[in-house]
Amino acid sequence: MNSDSQLALSGKTIVVTRSQDQQAEARSLFEERGAKVLDLPALVIGPPFEWSPLDDALIELDSFHWIIFSSVNGVKAVDQRLQLIGSALASRPKTLKIAAIGRKTSSSLKSLNVTPDFVPPQFVADSLIKHFPVSGYGLKILIPRVQTGGRTILAESFGKAGATVVEVPAYESQCPNDIPIETLNAFTNKMVDAIVFTSGKTAVNTAYLIKKYFGVEWKKFLSGVKIISIGPQTSITCKENFNKVDQEASQHDLDGLIDACIQSMKINSQQ
Image 1 (cartoon, one colour):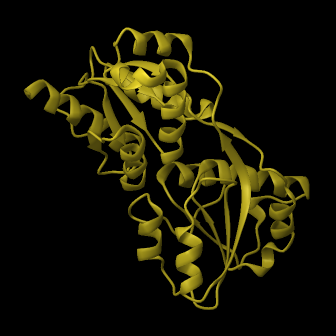
Image 2 (image 1 turned 60 degrees about the vertical axis):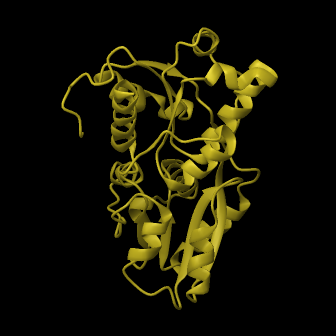
């Protein structure tokens, strides 16, 4: 990390908006930097509306040249559905290569004894497209993705390059009903220093929940709260929903998000 202090976030209260099953890692990393962490899990991960599109694709897995994963949730869903038919990602066809966007996605594959064939240098879809090791022409590519709300740039770009792309819903992410009471009280008492966002959907859902609780005066309760984004697409959504982004991570993962948070606090203390 690019910090000259091991406890660079000491005394700061940070709201983390990752899904419930991904909160623990983020909490631990922020707490290591001295922050008080409040949960606002802005995504609830569940199954897609129906499994048949994914199941049909997996039955024909040997017809694909590549499968591209952009999230841990996609990896989990695919491996679990393969296990139902007596298979697994680790025993995939030898002709099938795997690309993974992001360190966490790559790690989730390795935990299943699967080594991805390609991980782009930056943890965003645009980097995968730019650095993909072969031409897309003539390839058949499977992209398991979120049911609603995700970007379609991968399918569009590979389709334009001459690939046959099959996008299938592997999971769905929905907005929770409530803000945890401790986090709600911190907003009410203006005790929050920053909110960190790891996706556009967490930004959309967080804005919805804050407006649901605080009504037309919701902006008053975010006065002085830093909005920290993990990357360019998330920043676009943050600007649409909060009218600002105070800091964007240059490295698009949790470590980068923490560095961006630290940098934002430094700027604030100098003003």
